[in-house]
Image (cartoon, rainbow, N blue to C red; front, side):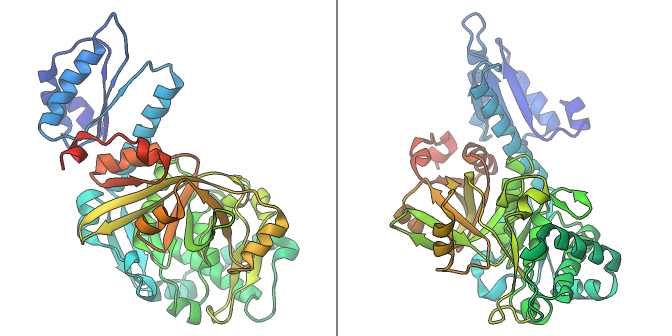
Length: 433
């Protein structure tokens, strides 16, 4: 245990392939720290009593209130491997984010109180803290410190990728307003590095969008796995400085192995088609246009429109595309009665619709914004009655089980919609709460 503590081990898998002596788990765990995530793993073998050792030892850990997880199965079995990988990513997300800082520029936008950063319950359950910085600092970095050579490189990159789909209008979208959006991206990266922000949120509306620039391009670039300098790690950036959206996105990023994430408005439900049109003038990562790590493939499907002057008087580009088809997991952290964190989780997909149908659907909201035409597991009524906010977050693939592990490790309630919610086996600490 002391050797692992010196190696800075953050989570432990205790393997039980034979009988063991359960009392020895305590000096081991106490040497590392008993607050770390623990997975008890055993084969299911008649010759060796691994199950007996697992239940004897893990039962002792639970007697004192440790929230542990148990997996039994042959490690060569793909289902067992998937369970272990889900647990590993969930536990690493939890322990990594305990040491992270969320930076929010300008505070929650337009009075959206579900976007507020609730410090105490967040630190208590997740360990993540937050620091608020005025958007004025970003403006000063844009005006005084951003490297204009990088701005020009970014502009040329967009021109090359978009060609005729870069719709300059000489008013709202010009080279200068687009360069201002690029400056904002570079300024956020600069301040994030200076202040130690691991992920962030940008208020935007209304001060920045009316007097500086629209945040859409900058937020997209932050969340993208590339820019004009090549591949990079996505940095979660939430529109409207929605803090629990940002925290959810950071969790989704880690439990997916580092994939970009989606931020969407819960905009419009089409009951005749049983689909949601989730769109927002904001940070859909361009990755989701074609789900490629090559920006050229994604930007074939993207158009930059002039920003709507009614909402965004300072101008810039609105990013428009339809998310490519495929499986997605949607989630959102919520808060009940001031201190009880929970997460709503649902499996779903982005639909591959005919182009004319897409255009007709998009025209009912805003055709110049990015759209996800989503179908979820869970009825409209179930979603409406349970979902905690106007913003929903997403990531590629089926990550429901990993998110449930994360919530159980953190001690927050996972609320899974649809059939998977009914199938979920509640852990003992939840049953006895």
